Each structure stands twice: as C-alpha cells, then as structure tokens.
Length: 192
Image (cartoon, rainbow, N blue to C red; front, side, top):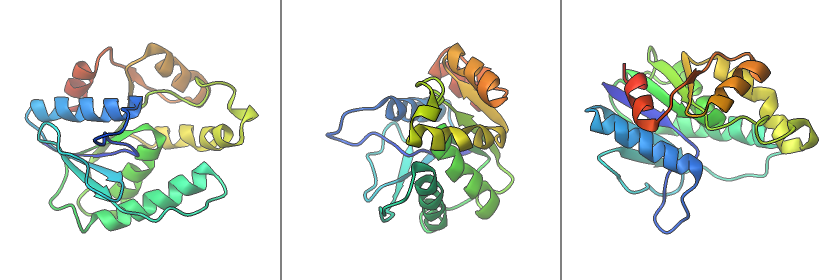
C-alpha cells in the first residue's frame, strides 16, 4: 500500500526531538517495516534525513506574520499542498495525518491533489487543546480549539495512544476516536 503522511514536524539532525516528531518518525517507520511505501510531507526549507526507508519531502514555504495560529495553519497548509505536486508522484491509497495541522494538510490534499483523491484519511492525535488546559483563557489555544474538533470529524478515522485523549475527543469535540495502546499496534490498525 502507498501511504502519504502530513505533519508540521519531522526530526532534524542536531535539533531536540519533540513528542510529535517522535510519533511521526515511529509510526512511519512501523508502517515501512510492515512493507508499505511511506512518504511524509512536512513544511521546511530542506529535506529531512531519510529514516528507515521513509521518503520525507520538505516543502519550503515563506513564513509571514499571521494574526493567529489558525490563519497561519490554513494559509501555510494550502501552500504546502499546492507545492507538493512538484515533489510527489503516483497515487496514494491512504493518508495519515498528525495532529490538527497535519489533518488540515491531509484534507486539502484529498480534495485538491489527484494523487490523494479517493484515499482514506486517518488522523493521529497526541492531545487536544482541552488536555493542555482551559483553551478559552489563551488566544492561541482558543483559536486551535475552535477548529480542532471540526477538522478531526472530517477524517475517516481518528486514533490516539492515550485513553485520556480519546475521552477528551469524545467529550469536548464529539469525535469518535479509537484508543490504540502502542505505536506498533497503531501501525497495524492504520494499515488494515
């Protein structure tokens, strides 16, 4: 199966590893180990290293001053997806997105890029804005919370490796999410 993934982050040599980078690297490596052709698309001015046979494509986009994180996420995602056509070839069977930013890119790709049209789309969520605190007490967090639930509801499947995240998605966003206890199991579930 050909799988394309979208994330705002991927590990870079010399930089500290974030939780999201670890998740993207681990899940894409598991999917590759299961025998799938995996391509990850991320914003960035240079192509990150190729780990475990996963093809990583960095799409350079200009950073501009946006009024909030949601407008930045929407505008930048559109730029990434519009420019990925020059770096991606063939048709993909499945789209895997990471967090709300990756889901925006995945949803845009599914509706505008021939290589992704007809693909199933699954989102992997580390946590929600509600898990990080009361989003309405912070402008950035409330901006993300205002769009996060809608984005996740557009996906064919939503997955989390923490039960608390699954409960939060259901209770705060009315999103049916599936708890998967490990990244290895998550790779098998997504590849089914």
